[in-house]
Length: 178
Image 1: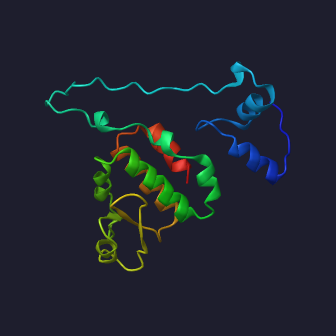
Image 2: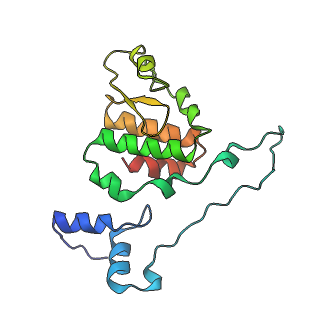
Image 3: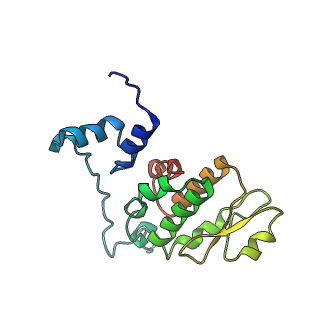
């Protein structure tokens, strides 16, 4: 493998052409420059849960309530256009809430030692600690604290993804969108 240097503007253009999470710069360039079918990024489809199946307890698995994947809703260009971490954080949470409207309330269980991270109102979060700076998650009935550091925001995204039924690998991919 060879290494090349490119300027920031060109790098941003290449990154904006990403079609799948995890697509490398080499794959993007191969697809753009060579246009071959071999260059296309393989799409891995998740196995759909069998309708009507139940687990040993007689309950339907949580994954059956998923209305698609958050990766279908997240637009990389929108994420790149958002210059602030908080803005990207809110966009990702909004995509999760839209993808999993019936399950999203599970994020209310995600808490810190002394703080509640998610709530149904700004006042609920303001009561859980000082300087929480609650923000509404767009297109949802939920709020999230926004003054935590980036590492904490990534942890919150990872935990939210896991609670919504994503695998560890998918949760890491969601976290890395931030």
